[in-house]
Image (cartoon, rainbow, N blue to C red; front, side):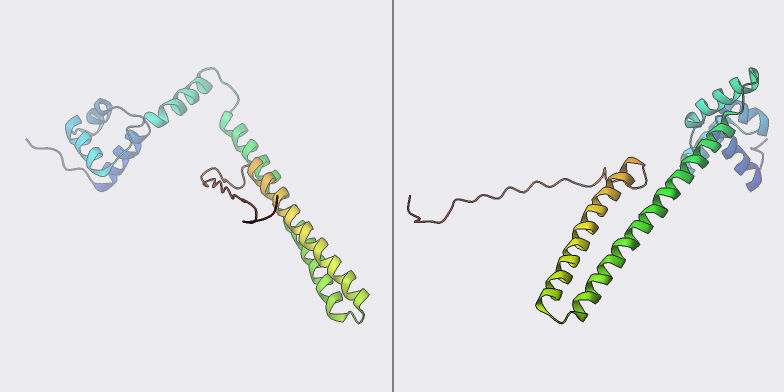
Length: 173
């Protein structure tokens, strides 16, 4: 007698159960296929052995056994609250960026419309203030985004550049 022919749906179910932590012995008995056949297919197709799901299964079992409040619902609510806070931060960042953009555009317009040297200097100072504001805002937002986990810069390489200055050759002491 040969190995029973399983349908693609049955194999999909075996994979789902295996990746959820079911043992080869359990799956073999349930589906009438040898442990070796399942293990070979799992190896060939790169299935997880379910060890990553084991802790989740243990936690859910404890919740059911002791009738604990649904931790998954609490986790989902906490994730939703964190997403709301993150969206609020991103909205504020957009508003701040728009304010700096408006300041820049106002400075450019004032510079174009300036008639006297004094007006051009005042407009130029406005443009410098917009530049400083944009650079400061960019740094603050970058720090805030990293602290809230909205952006990750951990994989970026740090480069240290050392510049040496030996003065002017032949200068008098």
